[in-house]
Length: 521
Image (cartoon, rainbow, N blue to C red; front, side, top):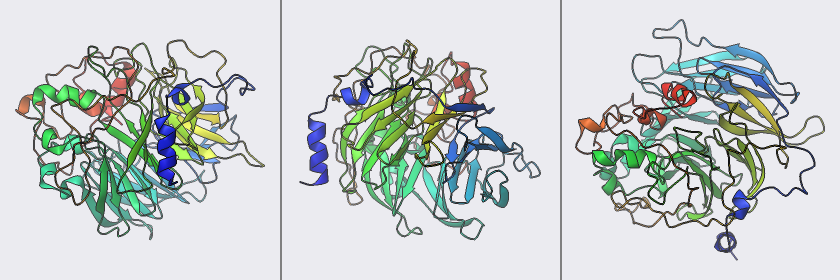
């Protein structure tokens, strides 16, 4: 029996109780809680070093290095909050992303338009407590997210991504690619709908979270000539190109849609896609926050969806309340480490990806709002296995880095505001609205095949109703500017959608409002 047949058999019998079910009390030896934490103003993305003894944290105005070798007492070892202050239009602002590749650190940003300095910075982190800047490359486009592996930097650039070679401790342009290169119809789609929000690179493939265009697998075996392998999920571009302005709110807010973050397992046979979309209409069957879709990609030309891990439920899990979509996450050695904003952090056993089993769930919505969760190190003779998570801090809270044990367990007194997903919730047939449609395509298919990409039935809780007037798309156009959502090609300086595209929403909480100022993540 082939691997995907085994997975399909598991999925066929699935009732998502394993996904959302509680941890057995017999397995929990002690109350699950963080091992330690350190306050860091402006915490966003987190990137552990390969030995797991340090973690670098993007802070909006720079970055810090945190010593986590003593997991109970993490401490700041280095910080630089004045990047490129000596350059014109400096210092850098809204530095939200960084990545580690061996003894090198990549710091990028910002995801902002206008006359602000935009750059990629390379550091030697052979001594993580004393990073040394070795290269700087200013660019003419916003950079929201990046990936860094084998000496190559992969940068988001609006509706495309670009590749840069850093092997000689300098930035050398290699190529760039976007889905609009595969078919003329994509150029007629507003660039906000096909934005490369984030990406993951492993082996010969790049995996692009392409917002409402779905997730795209790109062959980069020849980095100078990337080519699309397939597209999974997402909407039909023929219909996206015809979106009317009165429908913008539904597209940006409603599940499904908004492929936001993507990663693969160690063997790149299973793909995980997190979305940032919330139901804005309590009268339909799409209530709740989007979760994480799991796909079998053992045959990369023919991906197959296995299941969905649902987002935690809350009294108001929309972006006007305690929003609970999953932000950044990671898969390592059969475990999925996830952050859910106000919904806390989780570990799932995904050794059988068709049947994820939640091992632990920790949340403290009054004091934490998590940006991302990353595996730091496994159990060893000198250190406990841990993962780290960046706390943005709700409201005016400072935020910081939390260190968690990589173990199973239950909180002693979990907050009552959050409810576990229904144990018997099956994947529903909820589909894109009729005016959007969905499809999948291969490089040889110019007209997408309209096949359903189902999502889970979300928890039935109300979310915010969007304010339509003045909604700003990521390319700078507004709903009032166009009869349709727009057919403009994105400029080099285009930002990413997400919270940045939702700035017309009234009544945002302080944490979300601060988020908006950096043009989302």
